Every structure is written in C-alpha cells, then in structure tokens.
Image 1 (cartoon, rainbow, N blue to C red):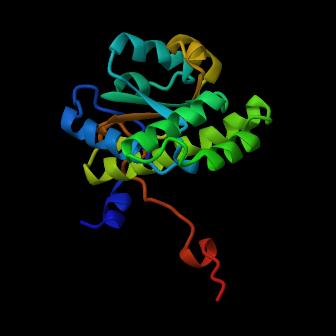
Image 2: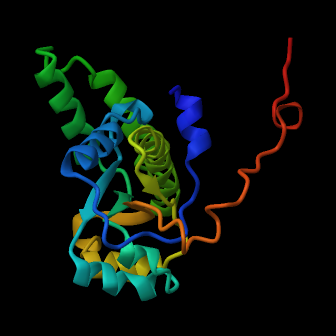
Image 3: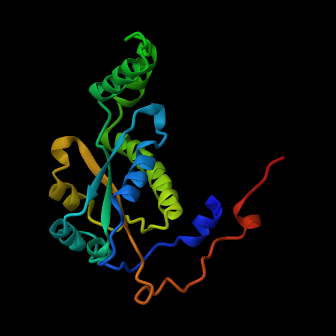
Amino acid sequence: MSLLDHLKWRYATKKYDATKKVSQENVDKIVEAIRLTPTSSGLQQFRLIVITNQALKDQIVPIASGQQIVADCSHLLVFVAWDRYTEERIVSMYDYITTEREQPADRFLAYTDRLKAKYLPQEAEENFIHTARQAYIGLGLAIAQAAELKVDCTPMEGFDNDKLDELLGLPSKGLKSVLLLPLGYRDEAGDWLFTMKKVRKPKDEFVTEIK
C-alpha cells in the first residue's frame, strides 16, 4: 500500500478498544518518526511524553473535556514545547550539533547570534506560538507513521492546557503542553465515525495552481 492508501484508511478514532494494546515495536516506530521531525533551525523545540499509566490517563480525562478515548487508548502521546527561547537552549543545541558532526565549536556562532537576536527580545507568548508550531509538524509525521502501521490515533486540542501542565509538572521544566495524540485500536462496533465516509474538499477547490 502507498502512503496515500494508508491516509485514506485512517480517521480520527472516536472510540478505542481498551483491551487492545499497541506493541512496543510499533510505538517505538511512531516515536522515532516524531523524533526525526524537521524543526525550525534544527532546534527541536518540542518534546514528547508517552503515557501508559492508567491512573494518570484517567486523571487526564476530565482535563480533556471528559473524552473517554484518553483513558481507553493504549498509549497517550503528549506533545510539549519550550515555553520560550533562551540563550542556553539555542547554544546547547548547536554545541550538540557541532560535537556530533565533529565540527569546530564556533562553526555556527554567527548563526546562533542571529537566532538569539531574533527570538530573545520577543515576549514569551510569541516564542511559544513559534515553538508550538514545530510540534504540529511532529504530529503530522506521527499520524502518517501510525497509519502505515495500522495503528489508530486521534489528534486532540480540546483540553485545559494549564491543568495538564500542572499535573505533568511542566512549568518547572520550561515546557507547555500543545496537543494530545491517543494511540490504539478502534472499537468498530462502538465508534459512530467508523462507518462514515471520509470527506475532504475536492482538489479543484483545495488547490490553487499558479503556472
């Protein structure tokens, strides 16, 4: 099957079979796809939390507007991003890059100076808007990899970010939650969306070609 076939197969699962678990091998593949996400300036401004603890998933249900899929899924992925840019974060990443590539320590000095000049004067909220966008790139790759593996998932923004941040202890780490991605296997009998046709705008309405 092609990637397009896999994407046509997937949908935003509304009910999971709580008895079915995703294998560690497949979870590892999805996580690796997320880790390989391209990010602005290669800074990897977001991180991933993988939750299988049932008690913790249950605690997140009311934070996520009572959506039971959070509790019933096999694995709950939480995408979190830097709350703001700092000099240490920028320099640390490029120190790591130059070390891994065996390049001179000052190889990217001029570039990191430009990044610091751009981001450090911004307000924290403006920084977070940019770092959070990087997480959405990871979300796209996670959805595609999950579809290829025939693992169901449901992108979610409908939750109280502040309460989730507090529950997971994110403020002390300089991180803020961005989105949730439950992974698991659809409950075909109980999912109202399972039998529904996938609907997208036709190509001639969606795409504008400029030649």
